[in-house]
Length: 182
Image (cartoon, rainbow, N blue to C red):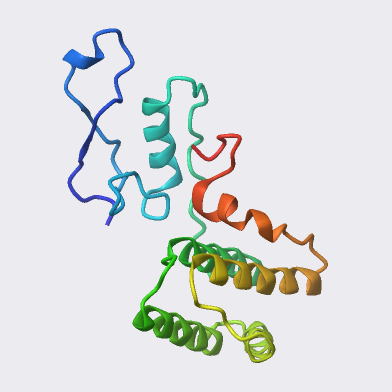
């Protein structure tokens, strides 16, 4: 997906004669969203960081190379990290005003997801949570907050620190205000 044809971006030059230079191509792996901006969920961290470096002259960091891939089956911790990253990323891209079909699709996905999850104990716990706390699908904020509360319940069971749900969009959608995700 990320290897689709590269699209050029205007404004990436920083020299005094920037208006004379043609737009520079996006780094390999940067995928644009429907809004024409680089999509965080569709681009790798290194590609997104590379793009940010070229478009933000104030950014002086160089992207770190990605960690080597682990070619072993995931344990419960790796599975959990990947799962929460996927679910929170779905919440971050869920529409603010979803259609009735999108609402039902999300409900169905979460129902099936909770039944097919590889860790059966985790799956049963999540199904129980969904019975107690009906999934909220009225919009991005509604679902994002519901999911954050579900994640915090798991964190409590595991003795982990809870996340401040007022910051879920900053963590999973827009990136931290200090710029470390750019």
